[in-house]
Image (cartoon, rainbow, N blue to C red; front, side, top):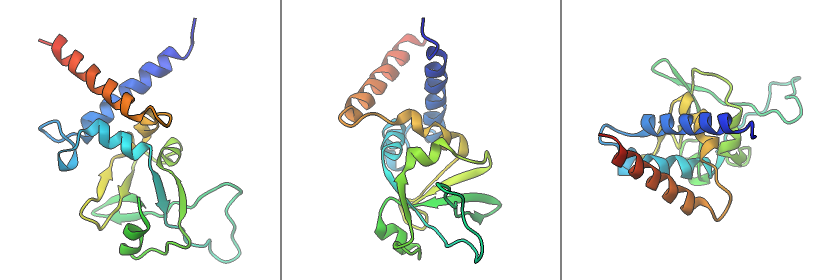
Length: 165
C-alpha cells in the first residue's frame, strides 16, 4: 500500500486548477498556447532572478536568495527572466542575476499574495498568480519525458471531455 497516492492526487488537482487559471475564456492560454504546454515549459525552464547586493553589514544566510519584489497597482510581483536579453531590456544587471530552475523557485514560494512576473516589460510577459506558481513543480518531467507527459495530459483531457455529458 502506497502513502504517496493522496499526494499525487493533490498534485494532479493543483495542476488542473493551475491550467484552469492559466486558460483564457476560450480554454487557451496566452497567445493561444495550450495552458498545460505553457505551464510545462515554464516549470522546466531556467529563470534569471535579479539580485541586489545585501545592505552593507548584512549577509544572507547560506543558501538563501533575495527575492526582488516590485509592486504595480497594489499587486506584488517577483520578476524573473527566461533570457539575458529580457533581463537587460528590463534594466537589470545580468552579471549579478541568479540562474535557477523555475520549479525550484516555485517549490519554496514564500507568500500567498506574491505573484510571479515572467519577462516583465516584454510583449511576451506573463503575470502568474501564487496558486499557479505553487503548482508549477507538478509540471516538471524528467528529460526526454516532456513531450510524452504533455501528450498524456492532453489525452487525459480528451478522455475526461468524452465522459462528461
